[in-house]
Image 1 (cartoon, rainbow, N blue to C red):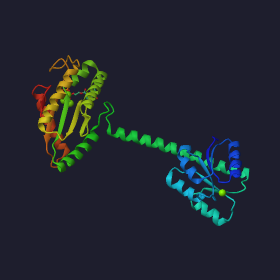
Image 2: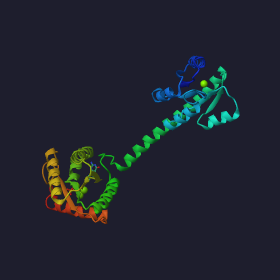
Image 3: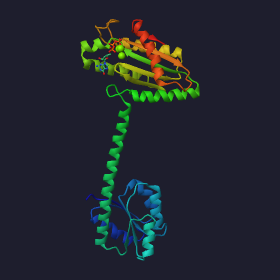
Image 4: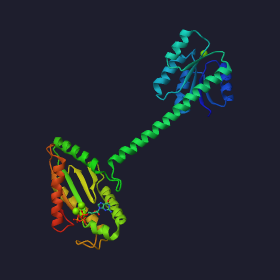
Length: 311
Ligand code: GH3
Ligand code: MG
Ligand code: MG
Ligand code: MG
Ligand code: MG
């Protein structure tokens, strides 16, 4: 088994030196202290796997130190008490105060070695459990990220968008500030896919998503993939004049990418159409109705010739 970091606290010099030597001979890394307070001060930096603690000490009783270790360092580390006394009441009390085992002095080296091995087995199991729990936590974090994320573009997905929109509607219903929803649809994306291929189509959606993310990354701004080649942007505290500016900014940003689209009836480059609504929510709006309303405006932008917005 791996060597352990053993913190030894023993006020009597001869006993301390004897134990330190024994432990080192067993292959462990030992840090020995004569005072409880010194041991406590060095505890975190030494990061022990096992504590051997004399009970009778002048500055601080071993049991008091054990209680302080338990209180200050939430990660459990086995504590074995050392004492010249072997009365059952004392042993029971020491274990009650946070000890895991008890060795009577003079310490028999075979018993010492066996008890250290027993604690080592528990430590190994604890370490494995901790590792498993870290892996589980990481898997959980990844999963909860994936639950809210669109796989292709890594933007927020529809699920997250719905949740955020209803939260923002309630919030703005209370704070009386305007909310804007922009819905954006790529123009003539079917012929784009048909001629340039689905992979090029996917890459273009990723590029558009990247642009949206870069433009709307402040607090209170959410970009999501609504579905297919449609995106939705939510802008907190954004009124209709500001929404018009944002739509114009978006239109310019996307045309200035100058993505070649020779099969578009609108331009020879890729363009988008947008619909936007801005209003002060009552807090009672249904999100489905809001999507319908903004989709209607998007449809009007399409009907009017695309590469434009109705806000
Ligand atoms: P319009 O200007 O009226 O919006 O025309 P359009 O061709 O974009 O409209 P339509 O809704 O008929 O087609 C949308 C196309 O978007 C259909 C589909 O091929 C493409 N599309 C949707 N999702 C994806 C995707 O994840 N990847 C790729 N490559 N294409 C997609
Ligand atoms: Mg002592
Ligand atoms: Mg569409
Ligand atoms: Mg369409
Ligand atoms: Mg489209």
